[in-house]
Length: 117
Length: 111
Image: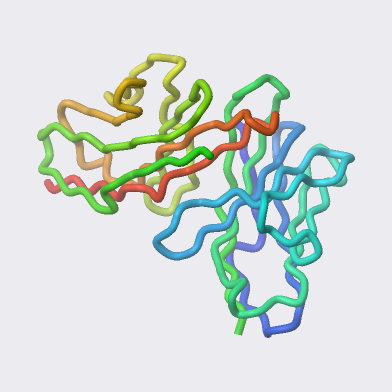
């Protein structure tokens, strides 16, 4: 079945540094990738939708300059948390859709636990 | 705006007992609803979708537009059903078919 690999699984960084999270579709081409974050005891919240070769679409309230998303190929999307601060500590998870067909299944990565000290 | 509510954060049932995980939604359009499951140390995966009207691993979910609910049910819980369950809704308002999740319910099936 379709597999999405997300790396790293966890990362600890110092405040002010940048962190890059990768999301790869291993055996299919992902036309669309989604990035979510989840605070403790809260729902998975969509941050942005990433389409290959075009700019990501960010949800309201998500800072574009803070969370840089690059979808350079059909198998790779990256999320870079720039100038990270402790409040950015969260669980980030990506998902990918292999088809442009409406409501085709999403495949999820295992997530990345980011801790900013 | 769309919203998905799962009122129970934790749910424990005995093996063999019926289980119902509640999900209510608010959405102005015609909803597309899903249940996702995350077993321990595994990734989130699709369990079922309402348009398929299917039964997966003994689970079913019926969309009740009058009550705006999409509760997940299984007549006889098994230990391997212990997992985190998320109800989700697809919003097509922006044309991007984004998926919005509830806060999840952790189901524990007691042997």
